[in-house]
Image (cartoon, rainbow, N blue to C red; front, top):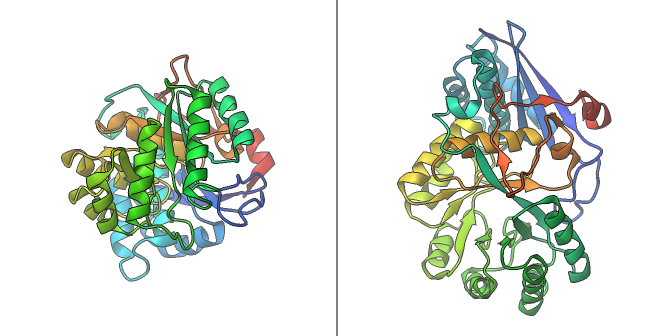
Length: 372
């Protein structure tokens, strides 16, 4: 089975507010789907966290290394593309595009063999994973309302981040966290994401240390992106004294960028975004590296339903994965694919068990917000 073609689909019209300044335009286009088509008519689905013009530009470089290659060797094909881009972009949008292609190649591989991707990645350590509702902080009255919505949906873990947190005062940060804990009770996990990858993040290790101590008082499970993304020394210093788990990694690409965070034990949790970091192939390498150093893997999932399906597959196949991120109320996740994701009575999502990623594009949803 050979790779015959690659197609792209831009998603726009219902883009969720991402918390960045000026990020409320629903027509902004961040997520691009890729379809890898075989000469036998099978299609693999992938998702890139980058705009369609950048994906198409990257494909001008990557197509010659993709078309005609085996559709049964996702890891080799992806790594060949990565190695061949040495002078043209070690990371960035080229790597984001390789990420989507890699996810699509694994989906194609699974469909060709009639096996779920998680089994092809090495086997299932679990058949369901705990999702956490991922949402932005709001001022207390609206925050209470949105938290209650997630509880009603059955989530038993919720992550809150960005917007006012770390941007007003320490007192207000504590008001936000205490409001969340009072609303959800003691039996629901809370995670806090400071959003240190926002433009010109002003805080350093001392702020992060004091904030971590405050978060401990409210039983917060982990503290995410407390510092700027590349501050390995700062994360290592923070982790030495933090009473809560320290997490980061959503903007990093390629395993080499993650390596110092893992080998120096600068974090407790590494958070690769499979639609950016290199796809499932790179995510699998990162997960085993993390396992060898006592670091947990929690994939970052602020993207699409295809990204969520890939996260579930990887998390099922890795011994150091216990949660998966789920951005709530987002049509690119809730409506884009069939079957739709459903939380069980205990607050878990099932790992896909159909061929490939176990999903297909929903034609009705594509008609509303896909641009081919």
